[in-house]
Image (cartoon, rainbow, N blue to C red; front, side):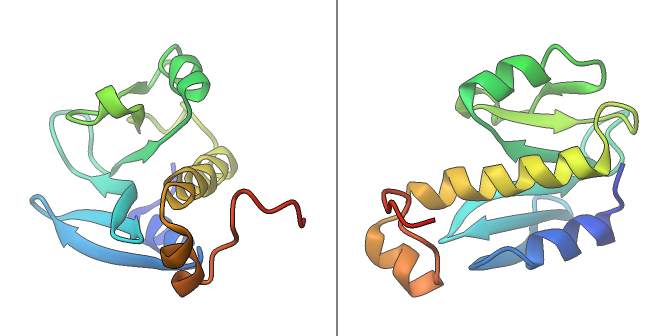
Length: 126
């Protein structure tokens, strides 16, 4: 699984993100003030665990994988926590983080997205 430094570097490259360290040292990434991913050291067996927001379908599928669990405190809003190096490849984790960023950014107002340089999710331009 990617290191915390790799996680932070990847999240920092996404448009309009901010970073804070909170909740006992968790590395928390936000877009428009809303959290989309975090890397924590919570609980037994979760050293460097990565958590992220996902779609309903991805949540269901990922929770069936060995080493992925509903994220503590955030499962009700479809977040998962990756607890095992074997659960997902770094490439897959990056793809899910990108999607988490997109999902959260899509819920921001048009004005917020424009201020952050994010595309309008309803735009037909590709």
